[in-house]
Amino acid sequence: MFDLFSDIFARQDNAVSRMDPRCKMVIALGLIFAVILSSRPILPLAVSAFSIAVMLLLGIPGRIVLLRLTAPIGIVTVLVALQSFMTGGTPLVSFRVANWVFTATHEGLSRGLLMGARVLGSVSVVLLLGFVTPAYNVFNALRWFGVPEGWVEIAVLVYRYSFTLLDQTGDVAEAQSTRLGYSSVRRSIASVGVLAGTVMTRSIDQALRTYEAMVLRGYRGRLPFGPFPALRRSDLYPLMVAMPIILACYLFLEW
Image (cartoon, rainbow, N blue to C red; front, side, top):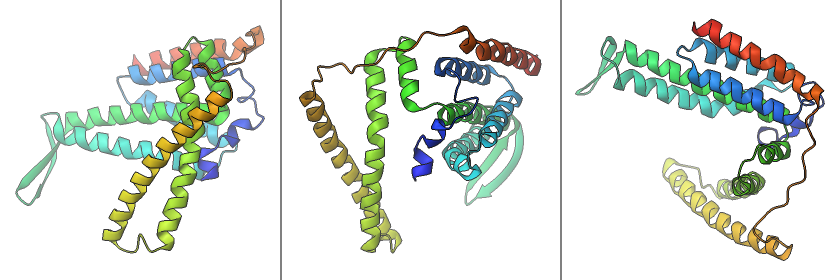
């Protein structure tokens, strides 16, 4: 759990982590826009493979990369299945379940694969950015780019207290397991409902306590953010190299 949700890998010293976070965010946005605008799954899959390869080369364990990609892969699977059976007109394969006939179409499968590849490519870029950039640098860079303070403050607080809620959720689930709360399907469903309600209640209590603590420490509706250093010419070199490469790859693979 610690390896999966912490940013310990972002604090390693390597060539990518030493890059200015603003340049890394611009490069990541360029890759995501190229993935979203792609009309074929080749480019998104290439971006995903490149991002995963960079993670592994930076020494990030493969099991951690796989765990963080598990949820996106599940979303991709659902997208491909829904598009295959709900859109298009050229039958590809059919099967019957009771009185229902399900037909996958060629157009639906192609559209689903494209959407899934876009999701996988975009998520891989975001994961790579998170693995090489500490969260506080991302928040400071967002303020430097002019993102409204309120949005950044909410993101900071959500990031900070997500770990607290994860710890509390783990404690409650462990206590339920000790009391045989997951010994059967029926008890598991009841335990999950109690767990969800408990986490919601604790999140509200935590929000009230956090706000009171912030007010006692001088909070008046605005969190202080330190100044960001000016961009140097050497910081722009990776950006000047990466953006033309992204554009060239997009044009080559699309046209």
